[in-house]
Image 1 (tube, rainbow, N blue to C red):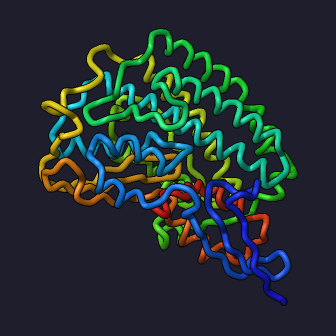
Image 2 (cartoon, rainbow, N blue to C red; image 1 turned 90 degrees about the vertical axis):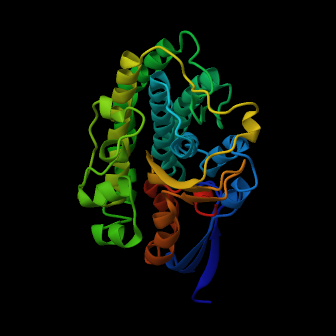
Length: 368
């Protein structure tokens, strides 16, 4: 029995997300690895083709639980492109606010998530506590903590509640003041550095081979490729922010970029709250019942910059009340499935959860 088979996840405390990695190991070295992602939500694309356009708004956030709002945004963008709907100006800015809060929440989960597989539980507790404060803000804005169903075709479901702007600013001010504590606790921690520095590499040639986008690409190539700047949506062309990059693609570089991006997210949120105009938040999109809304014939692909990279939907409409075809471009598919099978072998067993964490893998968008 020189080679044995081990299962990491989905219940293992060091595993990120509802997935299982089947590993064939020799000692503590992985010889072969295969991902089984369908441990929770799956089969979204076919399910969407059997639901009305409006009913899908309640389904799609589940494709990525830590950052559900990107699904709402991309689906709404496709509806608006097919139906030629003009989104009110205020709705664009509210969407940016929601997307950046969701990105901040996802980065906190990933940044603190390295605490589980390394035994640094303080990091996990800190990050989850701060993320919970963001979920409280989401609950006040949308009525829901996790799945918000807030960004819809034509704008957003309802306007911001009175006084929420001050609560958001108070939170981001407090978080920014404490971010250096995160840096000292995690990025400057000798025990963490021993696990992530010069380890779990994702070199540029692998990025191009697999089609990795987002932080994985920016940490390996030094390219400032961010869809919020390259092909701006909402009103990202009206705000100023930097795109952190690196040219040495170890786990430390990816985690450090997540840390630097949190400062940029806070910077964007402040600008959005300062520049947000008044007015309507949703355009009229359907005559009569929205559940019988027929989207004109056509096909469209839209994408946004999720915390994991390019996140896109390809949608085909035949003019009926339900989509004819929907294909989801999961941002973590390349590094989460292909990367694990091809490049996780050779690493140690305890590197597998750190691969998931620093690569930014959301398993339902793989088995979708």
